[in-house]
Length: 141
Length: 316
Image (tube, rainbow over all chains, first blue to last red; front, side, top):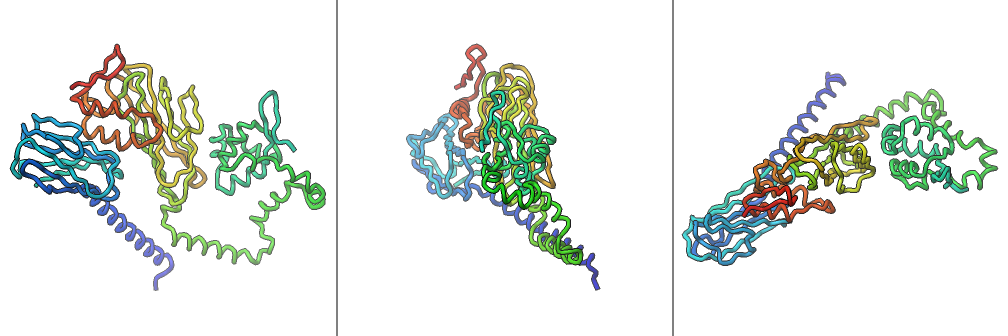
């Protein structure tokens, strides 16, 4: 027969184990959230127009920095939304998106000359609100 | 009866000491906690509570009411208590008596000694049920406080300081955050508005009830360059009758010619650094941060501090 003290001890151990697994599950979910703050793909990655689509998770990061890398020397004739900075020599365009909302977001660029697929890539930088850690997501065609 | 009086030109009020004690005890506040908020000693609080109707400064009365989270009128001597029912009070017992009776009755139940074992069993059962239903974290909420402070600053240029206070409890937590700024610091702005500020000692005090997480932020500047200064702070809160923790996180700032947003001091503001500015500081409404200037520097290749013009020059 189990006395009261042993019973309580077992109950405490069971509760501690339950707590441990609950925390573990929470940590796994949090890690997944941090990694999946933003994902994306190229809808068009060749020719004279390229379109990048971002999928922003809920809750979203507060702000985003998106960098689009093009072959050096290729100019951006127009873009939507307008890039905040463009260095034609390095082929690097930059956006700072503030007060980000969850959902899809499109970045469309008209280029001065045609490019081949595989010549572009994008980098998205954001900060996890919960942990304060920076997350960098690289998107390729 | 007029509760507001003037003594030597100082507005005074008559408070109800018994009511003050009742309110304090019903909220589980210690005399130390209340004394800290009002800015008096625990002896003074004890004296006020033990007198029936002590006369105190109106300013202290307001702080006392704030500490007890009631309107000032609720702790003032009641007008009708003596005037409308003087006969009833006189025929039954003195006004202060019922409270003495109450405190006695808590330890000596009138129903007799035979009910004591039953009462004890009921109390033990109640505690057991509470222990089963609530996780220990709820019974003992954990308070954490972390300061986010730039590593660098420039003389006479305000920079932000943010302290994030978090409570693990599910019920709102009353606390006092005390932040001690270093010597030579000049407070520019505080969000939320501080409860008290001592300009001589550079001490900012917030009394606040927080639900989960609250950011306390302020803008500060130094008028001297070439020095390293240290910030410190504490959070006092109710946990087992009162507890205090130190604010963790960043402590030191070097006042020189590096912009506050330039965390690594490399003469430029990089992507990570501007995200911190936007994520942490720009969302604090009313702080008065010049985010445009930070963004302008971020867009350039770097910056330099012009000592003569007292401004940052962005490098193309």
